[in-house]
Image (cartoon, rainbow, N blue to C red; front, side):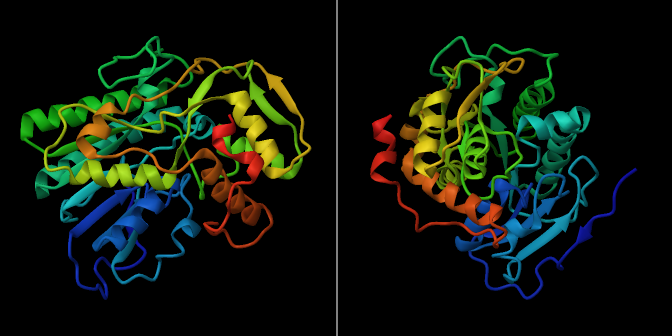
Length: 353
C-alpha cells in the first residue's frame, strides 16, 4: 500500500530568488543528506529533502528548517512518487548505510536501493532532470585488488548478511546505466568510501562513531578481528564537495566514480588515535570479525583528481576534532551542533600514524 506523502512545509513557500534551480535530496535528513542540503542551499538552489525517518533525524536539518528555499517531505522512496514533483537535479542518498541499520530489515534495504532507484529514475526521465546515485565501496566486496579502481568488478558474496546492501547498490548502479543508455538520462554515480563527521548516529555501528562514543563514555573500545584490516576515512565536507563537482561536471562519466580519502589506516591505528585524542582510559578489546568484513579498503581516485579536480583536504586529525566535538555535545545532552572550532592536539596529528 502506498503511503501518503506528507509535506512538512509547502513546496516553494516564501522562496527566495533561485539561481541554480530546484534539487531533490532523498535521504535528506540523514548524515550525508543533511550536509548536502545545506551545501545546495548555500549554492543558490531551492532544496526539497525527502526522508522516511527510519534512520534520518529531523534535528539534522534544524539549521535550515526555516530557510525559505527549503522544503521537507516525509515519504519512502520505495512508494510511488508524484510525477508533478518537478525538479532539475536529483541526489539519491536514500538507504541505511551502516551494517546494524541495513541488516535490521534487509528486504526493505534491498527495495530501497532497487525500487527507490526506479522511482527516482522515472521522475528524472519525466522532468529531464540530472540524477546522482550514492553508491558505495561495498560493491567491491572483500577486494582482491588494492587499491580499488572503478574498473575492478569486485569480490562479493551475493547471499551473506551484507548482501542486501552490497547487492542492492550494485543493482542500483545497473539500473542507472541502463536508464542512461535506454532513455538518455544524465546520470552521475559515486562510489563512496568510509565517510565520517558530525551528524553520524552514535549507534550506527560504523568504526569511527563506535570508537569515539566508546572512548567518550569510558567503555571498552571494540576492535573486530586483529585490527590489521585497513580503512580510508574521508571527512564529510570533502565528500560533499566531491558530490557537487561530480554533479556539475560538464561531461557525465561513463562509469561510477570513486570518492574517498586514499590515506589508509589500520583499525588498530584508528583506535589508538581516538584514545589519544579523547584522552580516554578505555581499553581495547578484540571480538570475532563479522561475516564478509573486508580486509582492506582504499580508493583509487585518479579519475576524480584528473577529471573533477577533486581530492580530500581535511586530515584525519582535523576531522576527528570536529566529530569528537559533535559527539561530546550529543552525549552531554546539549543541542547537537557542528564543532568547527576544534583543533587536533600535537599528539593527534594524522601524520604521526
